[in-house]
Length: 299
Image (tube, rainbow, N blue to C red; front, side, top):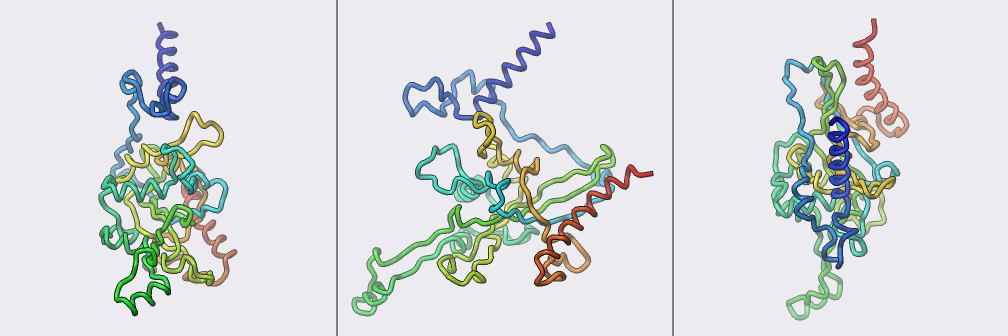
C-alpha cells in the first residue's frame, strides 16, 4: 500500500512539473494548442505561492532591515534580466521587468510607491512620465514655426524597456526566529532601477546612474511573480517562478544600506569615492548579521 501511495505522489509531481513548463507541447496538433491545459491537468494543478508562516513579534529575537542592489551584469542574475527582446520568443517567457510593468498596467499589482518605505503611492500618470519620453525632431520644430502644427512622423517616443534595467533594489528583513532557532530572511520590497529616460541617449555616463523607477510591496506581487517563470538553464522542463527565485535568494547582490541611527544613510554617504571599501563595508554588514546566528550557538 505504501508503494502505491509513493507512486501516486511521484506521478502527481511529474505531471505538475510538466504543466509548469510549456503545457501540452508534446500533444499539440497545432501551435495554438501549446500552453492550453487539459481538464485533467487543471484538476491536478494546485499551483499557488508557498504561504509565509505567521511570525509573532515576540518570536523575533533579532532583526535587521537591509537594502541590496542586484546588478544584472552578473551571470547569476541573468534570469532576472533576460529575455529583453520579445519579438522572437514565446509569450510564456518574459523578463522580471516585463512581468512587473505589465501587471501594474493591467491592475494586477494595484499599488506602486515612490520609495522603499511605501509611504507615497505613484499614480499611473507619474509612472508614465518616468518611463516614457516624447520628443520632437528639429524638422518638427521647423514645421511648428512655419505651419503651427507637427506631423506625428516628426514626434519620437522613447520608453524604458527591459534592456534599460541595469539593477534591482531589494528591501528585506533578516530576523532570528527564536521559536525555530534559525536566522531567516523575508523580502519586503523590490524596485527596477534604470537611468533617467531623458538621458538614455546621452554620451555622459554620469547622467546614466540607475535610479528606482518604482517600488512594489513584495507580498502584494507574489501571485503575479509566481505565475511568471524564469528560465532554468539546467532544465528547461522545470522553470522557476520569480517568486521562488527571489524567496530562495538565487541572486547575488551587495548591501548598499542598512537601518541605522543616522536616518538609514547609505554606505556611499560615509564611505565616499572608494568602491572597494564600499564593497568591504557591505561584506561587514553581511558578516555582522550572519555572526549573530553563529554566536547564538557558541558557548
